[in-house]
Length: 70
Image 1: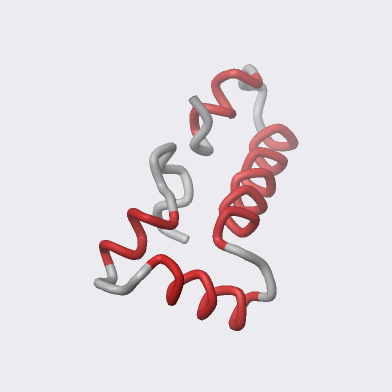
Image 2 (image 1 turned 60 degrees about the horizontal axis):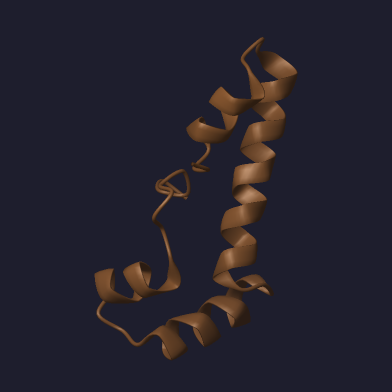
C-alpha cells in the first residue's frame, strides 16, 4: 500500500523484493485478496485519484501522475 503510486511497480518487482517467485506471489496474493496484484494496484490508484478529484482543484494530469500513471 505504501508504494502503489510507484509507476514502475509490478509483480516482478514485488516478487524480487520478497525473494519469491512471481507465480508463488501471484497465487498467494490472489488467495488473500481475491484479486490479482495488478487489479489491486489499479483499484488503489483509482480510489486515491477519486479522493484527490473530490477534494482538490488539481488538473487530472497532475492527479494521474500523483497516483502512479505516467
